[in-house]
Each structure stands twice: as C-alpha cells, then as structure tokens.
Amino acid sequence: MATHLDLEEQEQLDQLKHFWNTYGTLITWVVLLVAGAFVAWNGWQYFQRNKAAQAAALYDEVERSTQSGDVERIQRVLGDMKERFAGTAYAQQAGLLAAKTLYEKGKVEESRAALGWVAQSAVDPGYQAIAKLRLAAELLDGKSYDEALKQLDGNVPKEFEPLVADRKGDIYMAQGKRDEAQQEYRKAWTGLGATSDYRRLVEIKLNAVGVDPKSLAPTITVTPAAPKNS
Image (cartoon, rainbow, N blue to C red; front, side):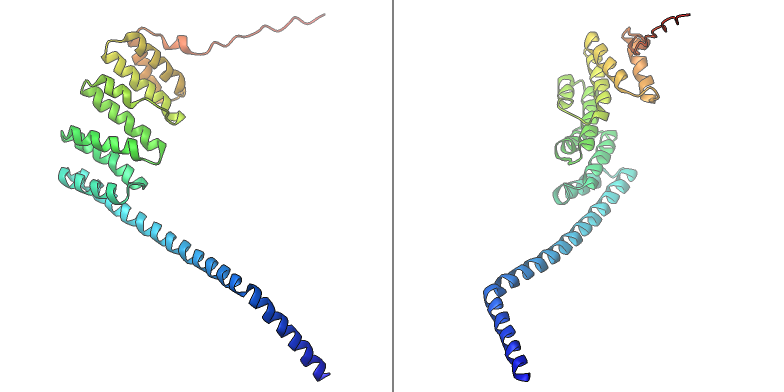
C-alpha cells in the first residue's frame, strides 16, 4: 500500500512538474501583472488625492488673495495652478475667481486672459460657459461687440442657452440692432423657467424693445365638450 501511495504521489508530482514547466512562466507573469496593476492603481489613487489636496490649498490661497486685493499674488498663484493643476476643477474655479477681482482692480487684460484660459481649458462645459458669458460681458463693457459675440459662438450646456441668448441680446442692443436683440430676448424668456427671477429681468428688456412678454406665453386652446344626446 505504501509503495502504491508513493508511486501515486510521484505520478502527481511529475504531472505538477510538467504543468509548471509548461505554464509556470505564464502564471508568474500574470501574477506579477495583476500585482503590478494593483500597486499602480493604489499609487495613482494616492497621486490623485495628493494632487487634489495641493490644488485645493492653492485655490484657498487665491481666495485669500482676492479678499485682500493682492493682485500680484493672485496672478502668481493662478499661474502656478495653470502650470501644475490645469485639469482640476480647483484651477478652473480659481480662474473665474481671479478674473472677477482682477477686473474690479482695473486689470482688464489680465482678467480677460484668465477667463479666456478657463473658456479654452476647462474640462467641465459648465465652467467653460460661465467663462464665456463673463468674458463676453467684459468685452461688451469695452465696446468690443464683435469679439463679445464671438465668445458666445458654439454649443453650451442646455441650461446656459437662455443666458447666452440674453447676453447676445444685450450686445445687439448696444449695437443698435433692435430686431436681433428682440429675437435673442425672446429665446431667453422662452428658455427660462416661469418661476425664474432672471426671467423677470428679461421681461424688462423685452418691454424696452417693444415686446409684450405675455404674447410669448403658449396659448391654451380649450375645446368645448360635445353636447350629450338626451
């Protein structure tokens, strides 16, 4: 019996050796690849968390600088964020925040550059739309009407379409193009919700260009019920 077991064990051992000689290298590589992928994933997760933390710290620095009005520091920190963390939401938010303060401090070109960067580089289309709207407003204030309209070309998220139409209406009004302004204000009013406070502002603009907002409301037709046979 012992000899039989020894022979059986030897046969199993020989089969195992044959299997390992045939597939051992492949199995080793698969194990190494899986382990490597796991380590790489953990490393990537750590890198992303660390990157986000650094970007958040710089955003806080931009925020503090805007509160103190330190224009030079705003530009320096924003430049650092653009170079190191351009793809993060923190950098895009910092660009919008910095642009507002720069404009208020009379740094018009620097403000436009910050907004232009967000409009071109932001991953989130919402941030892009906000930057374009603000940049168009600054250009409108500077009477650069054609350039302002150019900023509003292209697609934006649906929720921003009424705001784009409203801004276009403002630009056309500044150019004295009343018909075009009417058309854009109509789009803006129709696209905004009935309870939107912004819609009331558009109503004032519509009245100013001779359009009664009530005429834009959908007409509800009531069909009288057919008489019942007695």
